[in-house]
Image 1 (cartoon, each protein chain N blue to C red):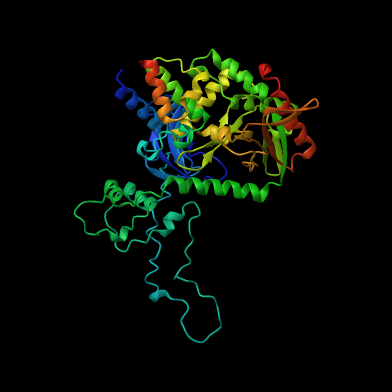
Image 2 (image 1 turned 45 degrees about the horizontal axis):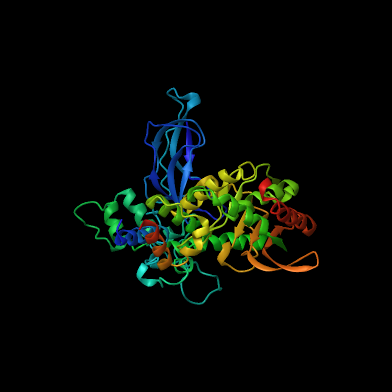
Length: 413
Length: 81
């Protein structure tokens, strides 16, 4: 028996809300099955199970916000599927019940340890006991202690803690216990998703700027051949089989990584872990504001058609606000492209713990010297922001040149 | 298919892609992608959906005829006539 935990979906995630239980107790689960959906600052993420077995029971109700690492469900692994007497009784985590034992701050008088008057100046504690805020959930510490406890179900209390409903507003002598739906009716509308998203971006980017010594390079690339290749390919393709320039960028980046592998991986706990696999994160803007950069797995091993299909699928799911946990946590390098309605160039901020981000500015017809003539060519500016703890400008330059070079031979990508 | 149906279908597909933009709020003669704030992937999704719905090829070579809402509507009407 093992516990299925609330996963960490990025360095900036502290807690998540279980919004859907997609499997029922007794269901057989296989490694990779989507077992639940969890709402985070970045939207709804589908969570996969990591082992084969049987879902024994859910430990957390839908709608409950719990810290990373909280057991969500118990899974009886396929290896010891027979009844297991040693199974520890799974104790439902109740980290979110407000502590009724905490002393109301409104009534400090009886215990006031710092009588006013002359005496040595000792900083007096603000309350009778120092309140220790629980780091995993700020919202809870803002909930006022209950003066006289109304009858309320645990689920309702948790919801109240999450939504900021003041329990002291509830009549203590209500005829029936207060339920979750009562609290839901009182809850203020949730803050806009955008502000959550902005907070998530701010946390990740602050960490990046604090920890990663970025260096930046740029290089102009001729995209004439790349675009001609796409146009020729698409001429005979139905709309749902057409390619976009973006797949060539991805593929060229994946190839270039083979030549300069220290651009691909993660820097954690003082060490760079180079990744064999290339999972390019693709920065995707959301209509509601903000952006995410989920991974396209094995970018290097997919052909252009497969990569286009993956990219369409990923973007459609991101637009619908729904993606998988691994897609958020497992990218090894990021590509960000301004598309064809943007500006000349962008300098990315590395998404930790990755070590490089490649930007592609908006392609446009610009003057280009060919032989001794100036000719109009479709060009774009490639940029690289990379981590000086892992590489330096010389290797970065080699990397950007390699991307540009691969884009000159689109038919080989 | 009547012209009203084409109009409604186009509005529906655009709403699917850009649900935050009301048709009444855009300039139908201006650049479709800027008016609806859609990128090349969104536009490809739109073309794919319209192509399936009306059984049209919607070739890339015709994209210049689909640059504004009105132009795209006229294009669809001409193909369905």
